[in-house]
Length: 632
Ligand SMILES: [Zn+2]
Image 1 (cartoon, rainbow, N blue to C red):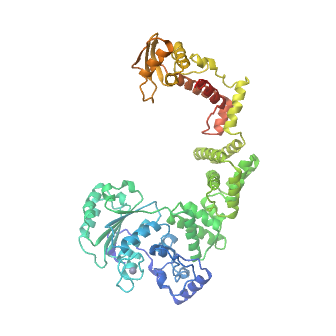
Image 2 (image 1 turned 90 degrees about the horizontal axis):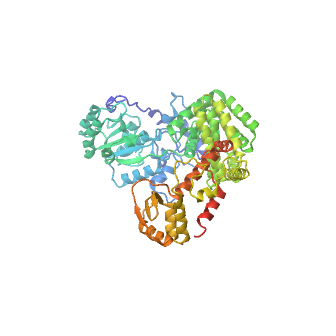
Image 3 (image 1 turned 45 degrees about the horizontal axis):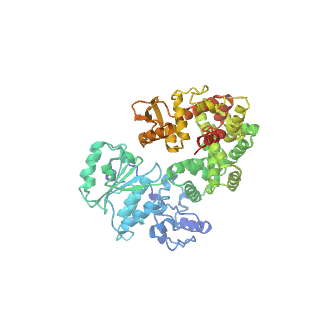
């Protein structure tokens, strides 16, 4: 390789060239495999575009109304290299071997590719691009593709920038191999200093040696020091026409606004699990490896949106399969590898929880544990099912369920469980998950947590429970003394309520009643709900207002008291806290009562079982409604 291309010395050269020249035998074999596997193959290993395929590919036609880049994304690719990997050659990890060489091979980033295609077509390319996204979504791959797209000269040496780089011309090949003299890659993680950047800035002044554009790819650009950014800024403001910057970062928030504003930003999406699964399936076909759908679904789920992570897992799975199962990647093996729980076993466990079968539940846990499944994964599996059932219930599809059995089970549960039950299950499982994570013995914690979920799912729902408690209270098996309506009406602090607030003087309640009886309901409501009495004596009321009342009721009150009592009142707003309003007293009493009820052993058990449950006292709501509205 050419050392000068790698000015920072640590960019590993891409070793891609060995796939580009398939032999006649390989071509033939590939052609055959294309006939037998018409769906395989959007992922070839050389750079040959679809239109140059040496043989017709019997695959689906692209839709008529697609735009060019869309077509590029869906077009069946040439298959000449399918079997190339069979030739004896040093093993390369999948992530590297299947690094996308064209935009059509880049999965899950359609929006970005479309934008880029438009920019190229209209010759409106930015000076600097920023690729953001989580690790492994293809930021550096994209950067290299853009470098190719900008510098490709086509097989005949006459082409211009294109969204569909040919992969055959010298620039394309050199860039794929990481040895193009004008495409400089730098890892900002290890070159954070201003000197590193200065080196670039110096070099920027000189024209590209052989390519159309001099391209700087700076990975993890957020790692650059502030000085380095500042040094870079001037160049970014007015870069020479022959220079392009391609930045990649996982942490876009750490970039200075000045840099963000000078770059065209592409947010690379996390790749959806079903798409990853498809991708991995196609790679397995190319690798001539049998893989169960469920196995690939597990790999895809574990990849969490990252192609690279998924491919490393797949690498391992294939290695395992070679040793044991005659080359087939089985769900069982992947499960072992990832410490995941079997979907069937997961459903059995979930079923045991819902049926309230404690023995079956403990058996299921023990069986999974002995198979090496992490206890935490059991709760995660149950949560995953709960989520899928909930989604299915609101009309979402259970599409990412890998098997028909799972889809059926999910749909059946979706029909049987109520939305409230599902939300309760979720809360309980989430709580259990946290406990298990912190527990010194995760297995024991898992047993306890799942048993609790099971018992709770057999309990009456919280509304029913509250009614039962109310009955108990009125029938004398009191968990808390029932509040006496008279105590509230007379304004005396309730004996049962350890409230910090003090009720206003007794005759305030009388005065309020008088205003009510005089039919001045607006004033009455104001006095009841908002007025906090600071001092009250015959003919004089000094008050303040509970927070949240914007109007000044002084005039209203003065008039109302005159009407109600036949006396002139001095009514003033004063400084200070005042006694809580009658409504506030009532609410405080209710809260205290609720606290009492909550402290009763049975209720505590209920709240333990239903975290986040609310105490709703229906009869009390009724009572207070009738009281407050009796003359309204
Ligand atoms: Zn090219």
